[in-house]
Length: 197
Image 1 (cartoon, helix red, strand yellow):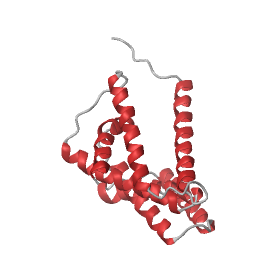
Image 2 (cartoon, helix red, strand yellow):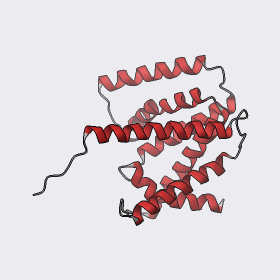
Image 3 (cartoon, one colour):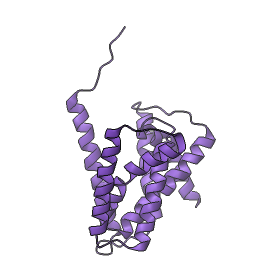
Image 4 (cartoon, one colour):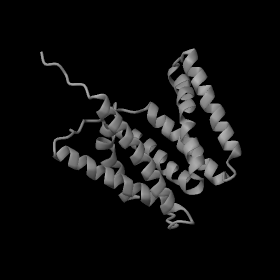
């Protein structure tokens, strides 16, 4: 029996660092692109389509080079997940376009308690006292930051709510265990759906 090689702590830290750097980089680039003080690009859905197309290309290259393999996903689950993911990403892009980066990041943090509540309602999931206390701390922090952020407006707040609800639902209905595998299966389908619209 061969023993499985576990990734080292250094490679885990590298993956986490790359995730954070790329996520923050994409957010900052998107904000610069969409801000009126930046380039004033006001086509958030087109930007979403570009993101999907690039992710699909990365997935295809990854499959072609053998770094990953496609997984079969039933069409109904693929359609359901694609609709939720499209609403989630478009909502996030509109939220970023209409709100400050600080409020955008705070709204993303609010997904933690929303996922907990949705899982409790939909799946009767129970949480430990420690988890509940951590969620309360997040909720208080989100509340304080939201109240003190003077750049919140009604449209931006509505887009943030749609984004948080749909992204939380996306986390719950995930049909594949990792986001990378989801991207390999779903993003080409989503990219085509934006081409049709």
